[in-house]
Image (cartoon, rainbow, N blue to C red):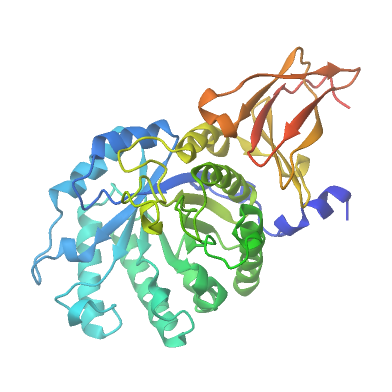
Length: 433
């Protein structure tokens, strides 16, 4: 095996590559919100998401909101305002179908015939009324939390997914359907595996996962790099069970900036965001990732659930927001050059291109270090760098200088825990090795 493949072998699955995906399956930078059913700052939130480079927004299309009286369904005005606000900012959407309705077995999951029929009625109503306005539907949210090891629970969910997907496609042929929303525990305890074995992928566009690791017991397990190794093992197992590549959508993922054992600092949250998005972008199975969530849900620094946001509770940008805004164009507009990228246990050097324009994304694990980089472009002067540690500054000329020989230019830069995006100029076919 060539040395390059050895160095990035844990990421290469040897199956279908992203080049075979539909154009609609370009990598999605998403974020979760709680705006669809509330009275939050909708216009300002949509503006901030658009400015950050977000392309898809995930929220809950509550069954209990659509059916507030038995047998009487409606689309509430806030749902239409929400969809219009996203459309005005050219933001896509992902809507979650689910959660129980108190009128049907006290909010039970749709497992009995009575509740399944009522759930299907709700799905039929909203998908007909919102035809052409929804990009993705996701069938339920974290169904597995009740008991990830329970085979009957996964079997009932698989049956619900098949029936719901067929109904959605009949009412809106262009909509894409996801299912799973499998928690980290469900991934570890076989819930996702049983869904694949039940054959649900024949009816879906992808499997959704919520691979949180912020409360993993060892510090090493909390890092983006170890997160990706665990996620890669999961992807390989699912591919083997399906006998093909399983498209994965990480519809919830993040680290909280909370002052408690599972939290990290706001600075570390930003570094982890940048690294995790680039790691997801380079994985051949992963089609997108939705950061959970847009803004903090409260003001208590010690309350984990209050501190997942990209923004604080007053919509002021946290470092994570600035990091996402800086990296989003490279995630969505540039092509990942897998064959020209190198990864070791402690250093990541990822190449991306957009036409002739080339960039290198690099970071180091542990201690910062000096790294020699090269470019096939004719370059002069200082190296232009976007350092995500100072993401708000943007790309600017740094202290490192390009040194050009007969066939290529080189420079020495410092790689740290914060990814740096380095302009390598425009490829010049007369100036290559």
